[in-house]
Image 1 (spheres, rainbow, N blue to C red):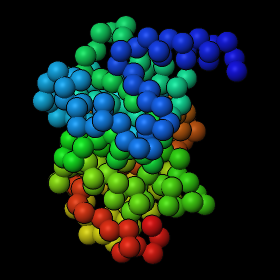
Image 2: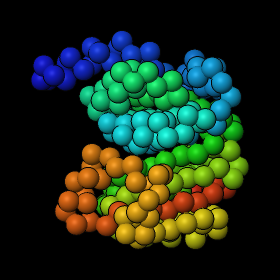
Image 3: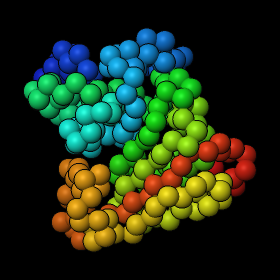
Image 4: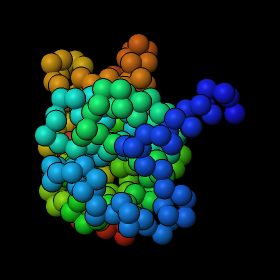
Length: 229
C-alpha cells in the first residue's frame, strides 16, 4: 500500500464527519447510525444520499448549493472518500458527511422514512451482473426500506446500457418517471443540480461520451415481480 494512501487512511480517522463502521456492524446494523442522522446533523432538514460517491464531488457540490438540506456521500473506498471529507473539513461545511460502507448493507444504516432523496452518480454498470446494478429491483427494494414514499431517486451515468436498463425497470414496476435525458450537457446547460461534474464525469465528457440522467419517484418494489432482478 502506498504512503499517500496510508496517510489518507490516518487522516480519515480524524474527520468528525466521516463515519467508518466495522464490517460486522455493517452486516448486523449499527444503532449508532440508524434513525439518528438528524441528531448527528443537529437539525431536521431533509436528508439526501449520494451512492458510490467516490471523491465526493457531488455530495460537496450539492451541500454548497443547498445549505437547507443535509447530504451523506456513501462509498467503500476510504482513499477516495478522503478527498471529499478533507474538503468538507477545510471549508467548514456543516451539512455534509460521509459513510464508508458497502452499499448492499445500506438499509442497516437508515431507518424507515429517514431519507428524502438518493443520487446515484456514475456507478459501475455491472455489464454481466444486472442484479448488482444500483438501479436493479434488488437495490430499489432496499432503498424502499428507508426512502420516504414519493421520495426522489436520481441516476446520472455515462452508460447507455444502464440508462436504458433503468428506464426498463421503472416501466416494469410502474414507478412514476419524472424526467429522463439522454444528453444532460446538451439539454441542461445551466441546471445547478446537473452541472456539478465529478472527476469521472469530466473524463467521460473529454472522451465525447454523452451523460444521461433519470429522475423518478420511489414506490414499493417487489423483486419477485421481475425476471431480471
